[in-house]
Length: 190
Image 1: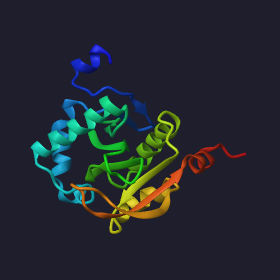
Image 2: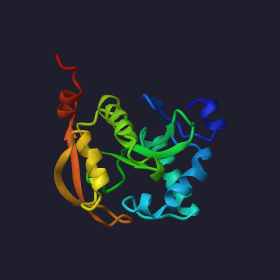
Image 3: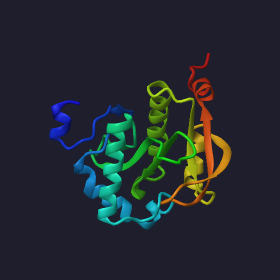
Image 4: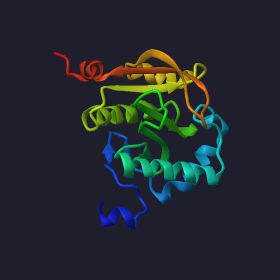
């Protein structure tokens, strides 16, 4: 871990770039934007519901701790054009989770721009290529049509049903795909 990481209050870990996004471990400078996102009832509906600033702080610290202890977790999503924090997404495997997940949550005014798909594609490449995962899942509530559409664009399909552990405590469809299916889909054609 570099001294620079500690000086900026950013969790240790890699930074990934896509055409329009920077994916990096969370930093304390993300806190206010993360709070605004987490207070938005519609944006937070399928990711545990709205949270208070104290709950957001605990969530950020959990994600930062996972980066430190497991070497992976959710990335903060930064829009390159504006430099603003627009969500969190990435590899995730809490205790009792039904598999190795790449999940996403984007602020509402950025919905419909393809950011979740773009960021999740980079995170899935990272999970398969760097973390060596054999399967990536997405836990999606049956009523969450927006995330189902993202999963479909990623090439995922419903694999099974599961019940997420407390504090989520909700029934979900487990979407996903194997490393082999992902690589076949990502292989250059021709």
